[in-house]
Length: 142
Image (cartoon, rainbow, N blue to C red; front, side, top):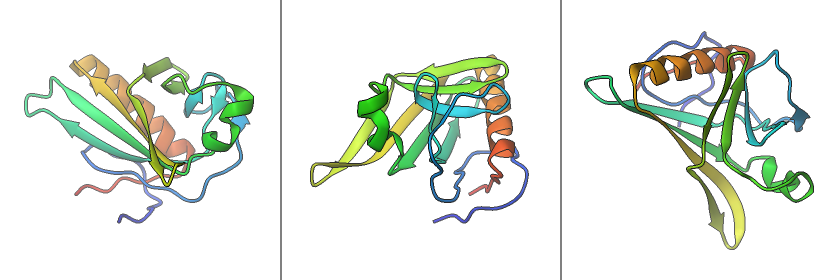
């Protein structure tokens, strides 16, 4: 398992990790955030794994949220409709979101964001730079 590092995010291909979840807060345009319900920030910091083709034309970001706060709040605030990556440039989104259950109780959410061009990869990396900076995350290459 990886340890949280207090270092600036850099480009590469492996997981991010962070500390315990914080309470849910409403959207703020000043910070990069992840949302399962539009307008409601998810305070749980996911592990993020990046893969990229050798040509650089395609890539995938896999977000793994262990015990996200949205499990406690989703009934009151609405349904999970996807994963939204929100920052000052706009919104990136994916509907490839799956919940993992143990003994009938939700334990984790896994979301995959596909990048099909160099432009999409660069835009995603700008979001991750902002998200890492806003949340005190570091990057560790495996």
